[in-house]
Length: 151
Image (cartoon, helix red, strand yellow):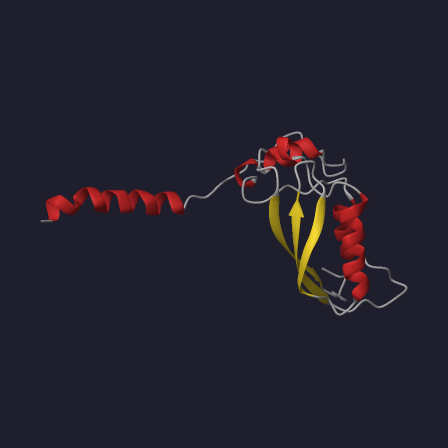
């Protein structure tokens, strides 16, 4: 009886090994933190994950928006906030808002996000990413207030 089940156990074992695979992306020797990231290089570094999620365009307005949240204006207090939205990403890298699952308390945060999607291509083109033409993605955007700067 066990001899008949052996091929099935082996197949289950192989499937378990493949599902727990870890992708290691080696850092390129020529990467310089002081230079801008090229879209082609960023998309190539995310190749193992491109079919599941599109690569953000490092020169796009959405990337600029996330950087502005990382470096808030010191002139006004910005409370922590978050939002969860659904967007469609098209083959040219453009994206459009489909649904707001969880709206932020600060409506300006959602308006800035929508404006960034409309301004230019938020993602690299599908041909560069080797992903399907149109893809639906879920964004979880969190703005956290960190007051301590001595770290």
